[in-house]
Length: 467
Image (cartoon, helix red, strand yellow):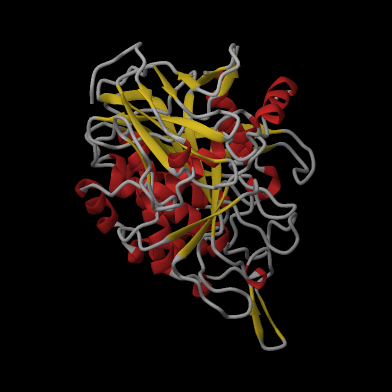
């Protein structure tokens, strides 16, 4: 790429180019092109990533789910001291396993217990210790840039306050914890550019308490969390009617940001950015890097924060202005979550391991691995992206801040029609911090993404107007 820091290069996109249908190539100066919108920004998995994905083992995932289910109950209010039953026994086992993986990291991975006492409130009748188990793989290029992946290790029975009955929680959410632990195992021996945090959190069923504590700790220290994924109910590919969809994972991504201020809402309404929140850009990125033959999965992005009237551990991160999204299986079977273990009219109820599809969970883990590794190895999402609006013109001038990564090669400008879901055009603008496109900002949406020397791209930054 050409070195043009602080300069501008015009790219002329004529009306004919703007009107090209998906798959056509537009008129161009430099490197502007219009291609198939479904694959325009897709990134081919590099050799090292493919090797990581091959190491993910569904048998290890199955062993993890069965071990967690064998603790009987992992209810947040269950025993924290019993060595064989309850949430404390599960916590100690997860800690020992993550420490075992960390010993293979050459000192790059550290493991800690992150605890606090939750005061009484709804679903917490008495002061209760909430403990997250957190493994951190420090980045070697941009260690202060963080990406978080989590699953919750607490479980529940039909009555959310019942902490004595069996609550194996195989799908909800030993499956998500198994994904996190398998990722930690496989990635412990790898060098990553940015830091990845692998977290098994508690208190989800009682009110997202563990995730909220972790997110608040990040916020208090002004941590640069550029992406967070929670894996919650990722254990089964079978719906309640018996149909199977073993090659699809849902990814829930909010539009209007949970953290939006009144001033930000006014800007969003004026430019129409409801479909371009940081969470939506993160979800588009996941499709780009993880919906391919290497994972064997289709990523179905759902344009909601979560399922109807329900919530997960990504929400505390969204509320603190961190991009976050939730992975969940394609169609839930509610007889096998939030249910007492019982046989009723010949039908088995309860969240038991036999209702999980472990090769499916392994493919979900590969989707997560592809997203996290690609995020960590690429430059960070561009900061300070703006569309200059001081002058009334049918051109569009974009500016942004240059990143500090040593492996930063340059930037690309992307755009799409306002009615399109995915980016349909990309322009290589080199190592610049501004670019002018001969196309009206009133008619399309623009974005900016960074490119590393390896060819890996960052998520897209959606520009705000600037007078």
